[in-house]
Image 1 (cartoon, rainbow, N blue to C red):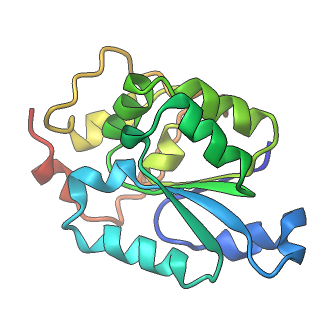
Image 2: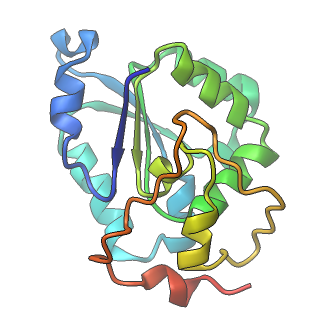
Length: 176
């Protein structure tokens, strides 16, 4: 599996994408999943993350998992060279993946070789559990997950902001 886990913004994305076979083409086509940012769409970091990614010059295929079916997502993933799962709220993202039943297809495609870039929440869901992120940020309003198990793409719990360098914006936005 080819995966990149980031805390925030595009960081190592250019180098990661340069290593892909499709990089020989003029532009790499990348599914851009934005669901995790929806509860925080007014926060500057969400807009900045998308703008930075667009500035890399690759072809973005916008995907809002909450608006697609399993078949729709399968079709999108068939036509892209990689998937980028943006940052935001991990519990909201996982809730959307489960309710649309797209969590399995996403994990299966990554295990089959589709390169995956996960930033913040997109990185957190790659692990075995999102529980530590919820303990730090608090749950997102309106999300009531009973199971905090991640996609299990890596055999670890991923907590990208554990260094404490980011402000606790999620805590003030996440109220049950």
